[in-house]
Length: 305
Image (cartoon, rainbow, N blue to C red; front, side):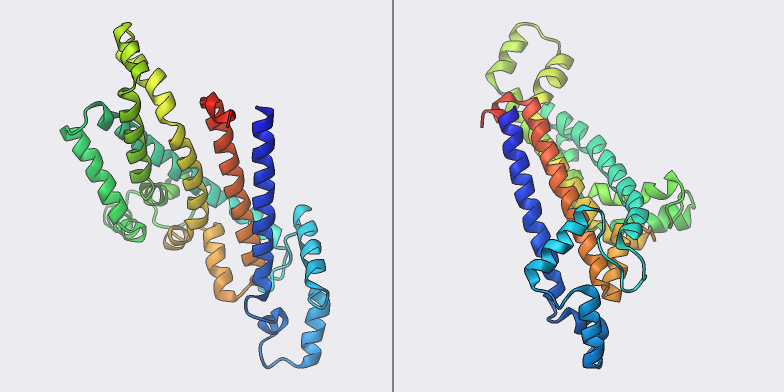
């Protein structure tokens, strides 16, 4: 297990360094960052002052290592628009995005795994068709349309749930369903396929012959093996939801990282955009690493390589 962990940690560090280089290069995507900040009508004296203040006059490798060192110490730069440390703003917005992503993941897993298991128990039955139809509808329906439809019925017509904000748990119900339903089809299909493969395997037939109860057969023996790829997919999808919540947060006016990213793009606030990309990427890497470790714990063969 130690060798497995060492390899995975080395890969995670390598990916994190690559992501940090790509994120840092955002400074020069539009050419001279000083011109991007001050505008094309700025004088040369203004540009020189900006280059000196932000360190753009130093060699790029020096700038990168300085930026990376500061980031590792929690200093992600200074927002041009808000005129305050980027880290403070991100820490203020992060809880809303994490809450939204976690609720959405719980909703997706609570719906997709039971549906996938039930569909696999009785393939080609009415229940199986309902599950597959749910998956097809979920894949075909844009999340923003689903969100606006829920907002119209549950928020405006029936006034059951609040349509904007993030003050109480009720504010997260519709956004979590809209965000979570988008990943439900993939998880449901993977669970169904995994369960079908496992239920047809020799060790399950042997367990049936030994008189193992149906509940124990399904949830103790079969689901444990079938859920391994689901763990990886859920971790990846959780990272995707954190990064892809920009539409849902904008629709429901949730002041999370997604909404902040949208505001930063409109304001051309480069340090803020860099920090958001970096933070979300690191979350993504950490979740993938945790999924690998969990899979290795569930299936010892993975540790062997």
